[in-house]
Amino acid sequence: MSLLSSLRELNHEQRHTVMASFLGWTLDAFDYFLLTLVIVAIAKEFDVGNTEVTFALTLTLAARPLGALIFGRLADRYGRRPILMLDVILFSLFELATAFSTSLAMLLVLRFLFGVAMGGEWGIGASLAMESIPPKSRGLVSGLLQSGYPCGFFLAALVNWLLVDHIGWRGLFVVGTLPALLVLYIRRKVPESPVWQAGQHARGRVGVREAMHGHWKLFAYMIVLMCAFNAFSHGSQDMYHTFEEVNLHLPTGSGTAFLLVALLNLGALAGGLYFGAWSEKAGRRRAMIVAALLAIPVIPLWTHGGSLLLLGIGAFLIQVMVQGAWGVVPTHLNELSPDAVRGTLPGFAYQLGNLLAAGTATAQTWIAQRHGGDFAFAMALWIAVVAVVLAVLVWLGPEARGVGFGKAES
Image (tube, rainbow, N blue to C red; front, side):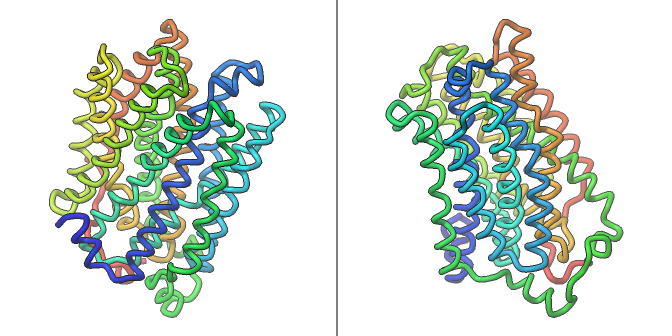
């Protein structure tokens, strides 16, 4: 089943829900990745090292579990739709405030607050979409939703390329307030999750302990799994532009630097869609394992290609595999989660995994500094190890492909 035919089978409201969830994650990632593209510029303005600025990324990732818990519980209690709108407004406001940072300390505080708001979006958007579509469409839609992440990265790189020389890094964060407009679309076009509405009538309000009875081991497994997934994605993306600047000597606003990032994100888009769709036939675990392991032979092209052509091919292929594995995650986590806490559990487990992997950018910078500033070595080593760990964790875990929402044990 192709993506277009799958989307045609959705009704009008379901398509709007999928689109809103996709745009939410796209614009969320857009706001996050703007910082990764201007690390060097911020370090120069505040007269600090790159490592000090990358700590802002660590704080953002570390704050996301708090946001996932807060907004997830609110979404399980008051509905996915209104809390998703609140969440988008908040992370847009904190993005705007970042533009007016007067010191590194202020910037770090604002990026922590941004992380809290950002933490709620993924889980709520994914549960709203997955609960609103037929089970047979989940794999394809999962890949589409996760493709919003590289689309956001691509948009951030595009805006940086076109505007950074004219408006500076502060101006980029002002542009980053545009996601707030998504609230108007959600308010007009997106209905509440039918599974959540049915659950409110059937169960009433269920506490976390009651809903999670018998599922705590699964929750722990999901956290560890998402730690590996986040180390995989952030390890392949967050320091890539710094690698371009430091090791490839490409200026931050150059067309060549943008081209490589564009290829990287086109690969991510293709991988998420392909492996998400393939997981409907091959199974969730098999699709994720194959994608993770296929990343390993691509590493030499990605970091040591030796020419623009080979580096571009490597950037494309590495993200086919990284985001190919990730393309299965939204449906996989939602299918494993009990109905009563689906607004909370996938996003909270995801963001706790982020917390455990929050030092990825800083760790890669540390490794690079101890090898003569070689980010190619640091990223290659990181991804090779994480790919193997991720494949093993997926192989050891459960799968619930096609489970009926609203019917599963909760």
